[in-house]
Length: 244
Image (cartoon, rainbow, N blue to C red; front, side, top):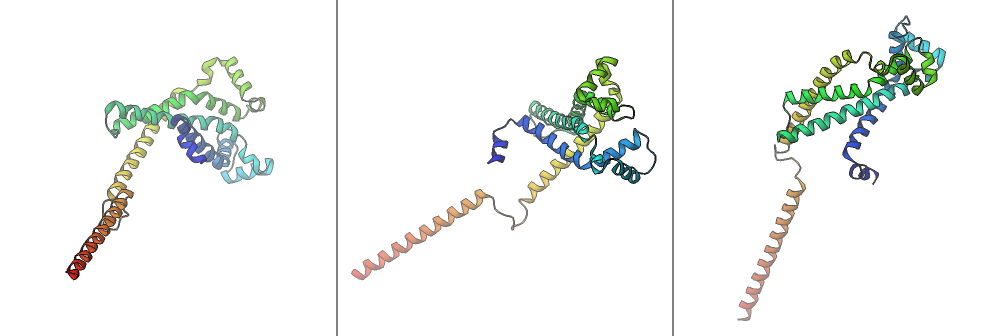
């Protein structure tokens, strides 16, 4: 019942956003220890291998230390993924509606993917800047003061555009990679759909659709009724003959 309410009782756009956010939260939470080790190696420049770094974190902060900063990661990645998927689906739907075709061309897929990546980056880049500043060595005071305070301090010191420092290289890298990702994904999905559809009509052992089963049942019932009527007619004829 709850599943039916979610599917039928909510807006499709909200479902897309919720699906993207949920997938991002689950994936990021599972991989959070790897992210923590990466931050220690890259930003804080701690020497040693990934395994020794993880052991060092656990020895100092306990196992929960491997998930330090995960909430901050989710603050960035959950909106990013939601907006990414949402923009791609809606851009794709708009192009399909305008073109009047059932499928996009590869060029249109590239445009949809690049648009989704660019929109998501523009909307969520301030969160990326905030996360980087808070997790970098020397940014502990920002981390301790909280998200809202860190935002206001960056804007106060660098202006609003300080929240978009480095966005140009981010767009240059994300838009093409997003375009390729969605293009390959959509091509494979469409190819699988056509292949699966064609397999349904190959061979005599495939399961019958509900319509075929209902029609066959109706035909069987009709044949049974006809045989019964024929038998009654024959029995009636024999009775009349005997009476004569």
